[in-house]
Length: 295
Image 1 (cartoon, rainbow, N blue to C red):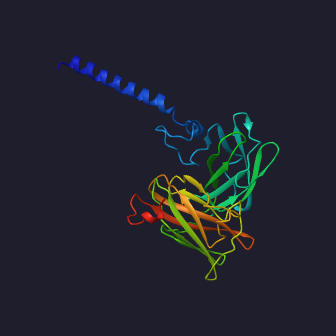
Image 2: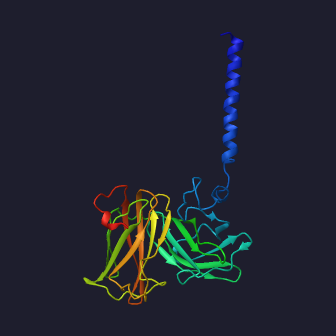
Image 3: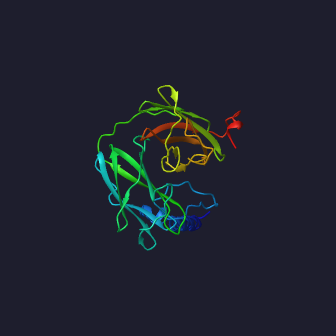
C-alpha cells in the first residue's frame, strides 16, 4: 500500500468516527443539559414498562419545583414548593387517602423518614416543615391533580453539614418504636404480588385497637436501594368494612419491580399517636418454598 492510499484510508476513518460521534451527540443532547430536560417524560418506559414512581422530577406534564434545593439543618425547617402544571402552578387537587398531597422525605441512607401533609396557599405554593439532619435527602410528592391521574414526583434536597452515618443492615424484620414492637413476616419477590404481614405489639401483648390513620390501619412506603424508586402501598381491607380487624396484623400486597434491597416504612396510629417502624429486606428472584405467601 503506497503512502497516498494510507493517508486516504486514515482520513476516511476519521470522517466515520466523527459521523458516529455527531449522531450520538444529537441523540443525547449537549453536555451539561439541565436535569429537567432529560427527566421530563412520561411514566412509561421505552418498552412500554411502567417506570417506578419518584424517579423523575417531571412527569406527565407536572414538575415538582422546590423553592430552594438547599435547606439548613434543624427541626421544623420550612420547605416550600409548587407543583407546576401545563398552565402554571396547580391549585386544584383531588383528595386521596384523606389528603390532597402526601409528601415523603428521607435521607439517602434511609435515615429520618417523614410522611407529612403540607398546607396549600391560594397561589399554589405548598409549605411543610421537616426535621433535617445534614446529608443528601430525597423528597417525594404523591398527589392527584383534579381531572388527571395520580402523579408521584421526586427531587433531591441538600442539607449542609457534617453527616453522621447510621448503620442499618438488610434483613431487619423487627422494629421497636416508642415501646411498640412491629414484626414483619413475608418475602419480596420481584414482579409478583408479595404478601407482607406486619404485627404490632406493646409491652409483649398484641395490639388490637389500632386507630384509623388516613383511612387505613397502616400505610407502607417501600424505597428501592440505590435510586430510591418509590412504592406507596395500602393495606388489604379498611376500617369499618366489617372484615378488617384493628390489629394486631396489618396485611399488605406489594409488587416490587426488580431484585435488590428495599427499605420499608410502616406508619400506624395507636393511642392517638402516629408512629413509624422501618425495615430492610432483600428481594430475590427465588425464595423457594415461600409460594404460600404469594397470591
